[in-house]
Image 1 (cartoon, helix red, strand yellow):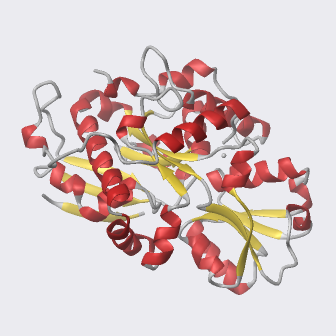
Image 2 (cartoon, one colour):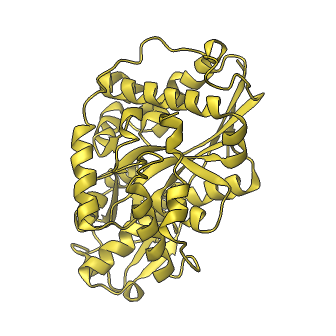
Image 3 (spheres, one colour):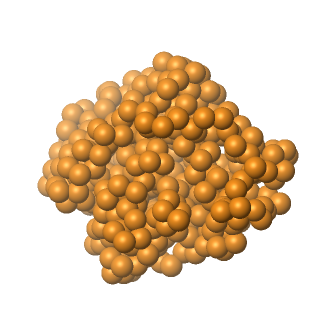
Length: 361
């Protein structure tokens, strides 16, 4: 197995009904799956029911998010699954960058948040959704300098807040402002990639930032305080999550490989749930956080396994497409309202983007 590591994150809206459905399923999925994955099966022993054709290389565009995919990367599970294939991990700082890479055909798999993912589908990117990684809770939040005088969303007027445009954090920030009746034009919102937030914070260039882990923990450790989290924003109707996309050409040519990579993610998620301490130790090296900080970040999201994907709240089945498509449609409509994209297609386009047949055939 050849391993190459290349160095190159996440706008959502749901009705109260959909939010309740997600919360109920999240609770149901918070326990390990009933059936064990058993020993890892590599691609050389794949059954004839799956395509035996393997690519020379699998290019995985990942983000540093404390979920099952990052555990799989840290433990080398993809390399074990595909011993005769070069696995290349490409790190991205935002979902919009993943979209750009997918559009250019430079990655096969990618991880995006609901806003950039909805935007990608609306704009006709050549990819489909094959796996929902997690539902975001307290792992994303508005953190402000403790001397800024900001105690509520109304106190943001005249302040400078940084976030990554087109991301889940940007979506949650705008949703929170809308929920609080605060005009976004009354404050200065600037676009900044997550790694750059820390330097801007330390220079005093910004009063706060709406961002995700591990940056959030680093800001909190540097005299930061939380004003509102994405869990609170979601409880008022604006839900966010992260999911996997696969390039259409790759999925069409190597459907068996996509199924095997789903097994990799499932193995990573099972390890995440069954061995949280060990998973946190592995993730801490990826996140640049202590094991204790990593455990906290892990508890701030809800990870989903393969068994949950066909639930009607998520990907569903070919006969009954999941409600995740409606969530993405509503997210895209919000992006149109915010003038982030020109138009949003009909619900059927988002339903067609769900690769739920991978779980039923």
